[in-house]
Amino acid sequence: MEMLEYWLWLIMVFGAGNPKIWTVIHVSKTPKRAYYILQDENQRQRFDLTEVQKRAACSITLDKVRAVLENCEKKNISVTYFGDSVYPSGLKSIYNPPAVLFYQGNIEILEEYPTLTVVGTRKPTEYSVRVANWICSELAQAGVVIVSGFAIGLDSTAHRAALLSRGKTVAVLGCGIDVDYPRDNAGAKKYIIKNGLLLTEFLPGTEPFPRNFPIRNRILSGISRSTLIVQAPERSGSLITANLALEQGKTVYCVPPADIFDNRYAGVVKYLRDGATPVFSHLDILNEYYAEFAHKLKPSILFETSNSMDDSVFFGTDENEDKKTRTSSKKKSSDENEDPSENNDIKKEKKEENVADKMQQESSGDMKIKDFSALNGIELDIAVLLSQEHQMHIDAIVERLGADENEVASALTELIIEGYVFRFTGQCYGIL
Image 1 (cartoon, rainbow, N blue to C red):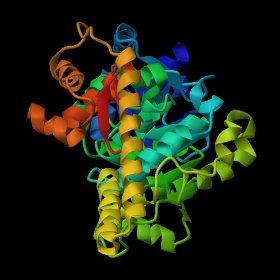
Image 2: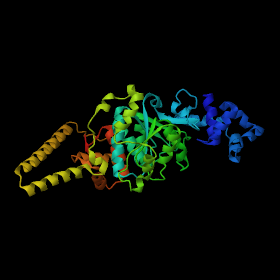
Image 3: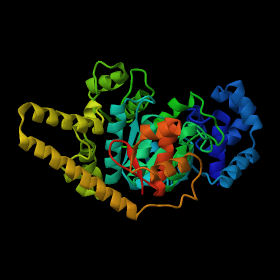
């Protein structure tokens, strides 16, 4: 505890992620000696401190440090420091490792399982969302921990895919662990804590200032074996994480763009041109992970020959629309050729689909949850709506409820995890 107090004192004086902490440690050797050296005005001159840092070194007492630790204990926030037994080994060798980390959940999963950092734009295309969801779901089921930055967009997609696949996920925050940012994701924190880890180097109560996120990115890349870029424009913050990963000697994977002329994928094109590894399937990553983590992965996933998504995912085509197009095309061909056997095939196909729908209705009917007393707000509205329908597309739910799309998506995630709702293909949902 004493060692932790002095490490924490250093980040309270210099700020989280400030490399000057390591300049001081290099001279003083230990955080405790650094504390006493910086109490001496003459000694402080050796470190070229700013006026703000000089005042902080004088005004921040160990009692204030202990008050922070007491606040963490009240909020069930755990704290570790560089050199502690549970401090992530992946961060020990990076440039400017975080002196102190605050966390909730199981920090040991960073040592027990293979990890992959997934990054991407906050404004993804439908293509990128579908690919990220597919790849992250498959990797999570195989035993890979999905790491991301908890932002809206592709970060949220990665976390949600891992949770819905009953996998593990780690959210690295650019603010205090007790700060609800982004607000749309606040409800997901309890599920991440239960099935993974919330991690940050920022003191509780720290607001999500823009300068925090580039600082945070070295942790994102540092705790994982590799980094996957799903979609990024030329100036995306995701590319900072990718650069850091390369500096740390990590592999950088990229999802090939849906359109090489679309500037929304320009960052990915650049990295692919410079030698990043293209990813067309989760197997591209698992095959490389298997050599090192064979004992920690589910081997059956490596020998699957069929994908859980069809080729339409790589063309941004809605699955339901694609099926309608194929059926319409068959019907048109039948009308033109006057071939009754074709009509019979279509009728047979439609009959089989109706039977499958009926079986789904009957099986879900046996498990229908009628007690929604534990729900409230948007979650209750969604549950009641879906209990009246067989299944609905997320866009239809948004339209019927007149609610925000991100709010509905977040609520659906919670309802699935809690066992109220089942997710079908094509972003359709139904009550269990």
